Image (cartoon, rainbow, N blue to C red; front, top):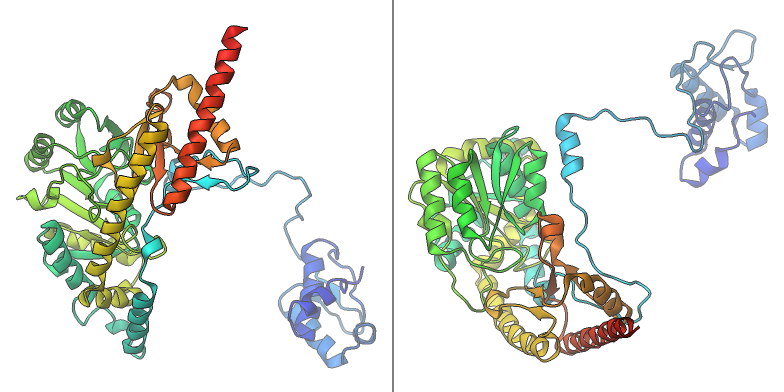
Length: 500
């Protein structure tokens, strides 16, 4: 073994001849194939074997010597360094060494949830996937957005010194968001209180880190968004769950436990679509005011409303600056556009900005921010919202009618709670649900199990979530027909077994 076997591989990877030779020999030393004290091939021999100039070989050898991999003595061969101390090469099949992580890292790993369950059979042909879609991006105005991006890039001051970024005043996007929230949501906030983030999960995670310490009780909803659960666990907080369909439980937990932070989706709860009552809102605000506690309001899809009662946000009802309002453009524009925001009380602005600078510096100069500000100020964003709301309202009415005709004996839902997805409770025996899902998958239709979002685990009621975003009317009709046929097959099998 002369250390030249890997030379061609490095050369074909794009490295120069001298670099490829150096890397080939070093690789064999690190892998233990050339051990301490073993002489290397002479420079003349290497030059002849690889068709290299002797100067190229000498240069590679000199580098190995200077870095401590080899040593040379007058009138003797260059050898692998005798005192070289390297870790033993890993053996195939050997268990990876245990990694020592910090307590925070351990919590992050443990808190991370699994991917939402898609009851999916990849072998089924022409499968219709009714799983949850996270945005309305099928109606995204691509040409208008690209025009705003081009203008933002053209107007960006690329020569501005790094030290001056963010010092020239508020970003236009903060001003555009503040104006939009006032017009459409009744949220009153000066632009300087709008803090931009990489989506709502980024905002929620950062706020929990700031407001909940090790062992602090944090009130969160069940069923609910798993990202909130992960953020609380990772921060070391103690999640305290209340069932959204039992508002009396919320009252008991507020007054019967040492909760310091509550995270809620009051205007359209995820995933059920329910709206928090006026009494529960008032009690939550009174609790926060009296005990100097905090409420994080996740208004994740407030732009979509197809029926039922829609109240003003908690933030607009708050008279004592105890509510932090979180929103994003993920639902209204695209899940690929990771832009969110927080409306932060004045007293929290300094710690929030300090935390943001710790993770990402000078984010105000992102091209996407400038493009979105232009998109909103031009009126394109509001026109887009009106267009997709009309389309979704039409789809909700049609899709609910199709479901009523085909699967109303299987699922129960409330049309007034429907947003970008439909949450439905299973009406048949719980024990038959999995069999039904498997039969439906074989027939080419799948969806998400609503129990994934319920922290109660096995005690959670059986439910399903059907995404309304990406499926057209024809596919939706076929999917519902397949579900009806699947249930017919399952019922027939059950009857046959009972007859036996």
